[in-house]
Image (cartoon, rainbow, N blue to C red; front, side, top):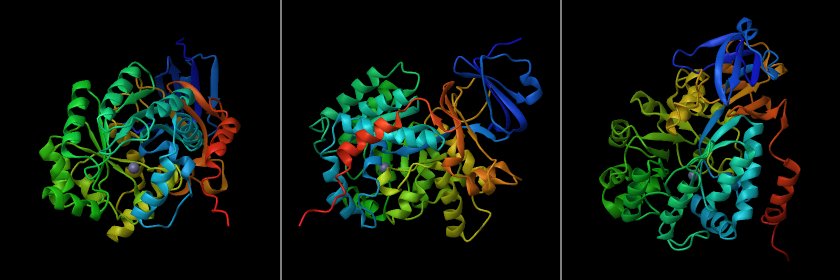
Amino acid sequence: MPDADLIVRNGTVLTMDPRGTRIDGGFVAIRDGALAAVGQGAAAAEWTAPDAIDARGGIVLPGLVNTHTHAAMTAFRGLADDLPLMTWLEEHIFPAEARLDTEKVRSGSLLACAEMILSGTTCFCDMYLFEDAVAQAAASAGVRAVVGEVLYDFPSPHYGPPEAGLAFTEALADKWKDHPLVSVAVEPHSPYLCAPELLRRSAEVARRLGLPIVIHLSETAQEVETVRNRYGCSPVEHLERLGLLGADLLACHCVALGETDMDLLARYDVKVAHNAESNMKLASGVAPVPALLERGVCVGIGTDGCASNNNLDLFGEMDTVAKLHKVQASDPTVLPAETVLRMATIEGARALGMADRIGSLEPGKRADLIVVDTAKPHLTPMYRPASHLVYAARGGDVDTMIVDGRVLMRHRRLATVDLEEVTRAVLDWAGGLGRPAQG
Ligand SMILES: [Zn+2]
């Protein structure tokens, strides 16, 4: 009788494998942090394990992958809403960020980890300041993360002069290189905040160390105009000239794209992080996701930071993504639920270069999965699990989460984050930020 460490049984298993296999009354056996078996319930009897989780008829699926966020910005949630992008950034976000330090970023990131665990996200890709603190938060919460220190042409509140940014990134990559959950990316902010030399050097470091590159790209029409004025081409063409386009580049937003840009992204196998709610809230526009998918571009889903979303709930984000593109195309058949669910799981994993390890429930992959409780009025009855997950479920319906074989939440109880302590730590420094001035 084969041994496992943990068995999850009695669920509808959506494997998200290439055939879209669904197993009713299925089970998952986990050993040494990996999936040892995924199959029909009857076969579960062949396995022994010291621990078992009853999915109680719910849906078992790969954990969701958030391909773009700024985790510590949980502390700025609701600080400044309903403002033009530059006013929002320059008068509210940048001044708040100038006062950040390691401890603040760590507590803000831990709060984000708690929110992600409670809403089904097992892996996130982060861009921020003091990124070692984000890595520490993810590692202690047990969440999988790709972290990268934001690089730009002006001094950072963290590493100081611009030239220190890449050195810090290299040290960060070295520190975390053998960690089972945390990996590092090289993350120049954008073509409009990074000079060509910084972009070129970022690519050189990334490729020398075998790290992915993450960048904000073509987020707004204004960015395209700025780059055109400076360099005489679109932001995507600019990156092509500098040698950045490649299968290891994750481009976040990609809202303002022309046909040539989309062809370039497809030709170089560039990955895209789609952030529908952030783009809507900042009125940046609608990324041409159906056209990208038609070209075979890999598109994952991101929430962006909490100051422009204002939450990290990928269930809500999937709902928005599916509906936004229907209304944009005046076509209800665009982006069906199954496609959007793939974007939030296996395609997100592919976007981060991790599809060989996570994103689907197949033997040999790491055991990153969630159980969604469907015994609820708003999820009864259930004809198509994918439809429920995209259009009806919310993050709060996630009952249990396992990452790398470790149970991070069991029946809504957090196992790795002391929520009371984290909440207190964030309120200690962020509580007064939004208070109106005296007098
Ligand atoms: Zn962003």
